[in-house]
Figure 1: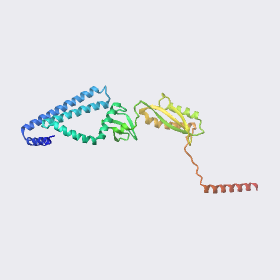
Figure 2: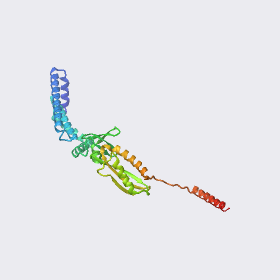
Figure 3: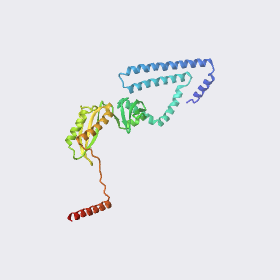
Figure 4: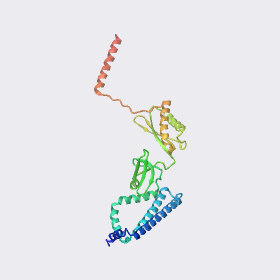
Length: 295
């Protein structure tokens, strides 16, 4: 391989940099580059409008970026050829460097392949609310290397596509309705039939709850402090916060009105020495009372 191609080209570039012919050629190359970029920009707009109604937003963004990068590659090749650079030798050197870079960029390649899988599989779309591990947020963009999320406390999170592929992803806005599960504990002395009827009435009167599907009432188990019941209420996904706040307040209010006790864990602690002393004193008091009565 001729390693003097680039240095000779650079030397000629500096030697001809102040000649009128050089500036004419530079202006023509610049004009050609601007025209090429303008053409691909127009092509990008036309194609994006054409596929907007027939293709998901993340796929249309991928097509737009592919067109943009193609335009820049053509511009770079055209500029190098106009400068007299031997592209065959340059591509040969780039191939050797590419192998070395490839070993160092395995993570990026893995993210790239994972991004293609995500775009084709479509487990979520831009605007969906997803949960990845302990991170929950709104999907801002789906790119070839990563996805970007905006959390509900207004933080920006970038998650590599490889992590998405390897993790369990929960899409909380995929379906129009969801169910809110509220665990309620009542005392052992409660009338369970009355409790279930009260819960049904609470759900039917809550403006944020749906009557169809019907609420789920599932008596779960005998717990340490009472009987545990699962109360599941269906709602439209946009009313999650309103329903959660109102349904808990309704349960507390209605249970108080109906005399249904919500127990809490209680523990009696006895200290051995104090307990024996108090028991002896109590027995002495009782004997004194008995003697006094007989007199």
